[in-house]
Length: 225
Ligand code: CA
Image (cartoon, rainbow, N blue to C red; front, side):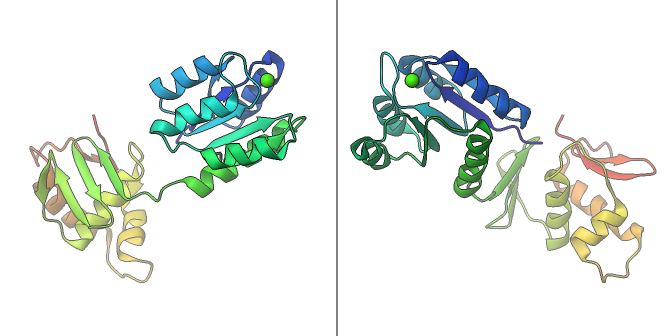
């Protein structure tokens, strides 16, 4: 499961910790900054998927923090504000805040907003990359250690299905359904044949596969060890 990292920049400990608690209980990883300078530093040094940013902060205020973040990043930002002045909202929006919450707010509503903004701003997945293999899903190309490998549609579909769930075993039946479709009357050995061809193309040593592993009696899994 993907764990989104959220940076919470808020000087009031009680509010920051409450927000962090609610986000963490929903599966987010939370980084906390108690002032604007630390917020900017963390936004630069850490990979985060979203920033919750208080407007009134010591050292650097929220607008200045947002300006600093926007110099190099399009990370979504939700601003918290006790101020209702239109000028501040407009300034924040001009600088590229993605949403606002007026204080006081309900932490549950904030979590819902965080999820909504992430859904709205999430780029579509256009490539999968692991274990030295990269699948370009829009151009339908496969690269192994930067060398392009020509796969059939079936092989590409198999590899994509496995790489979308790294470490998870997919049964032959599930793979048949995903790659060939519900109405395909093949048997499980069809999968084995195509996996063999796929391995010959992507594995360094096809007889001892490290990427597409056989899980005896169950199916296959993509392992990027
Ligand atoms: Ca504050």
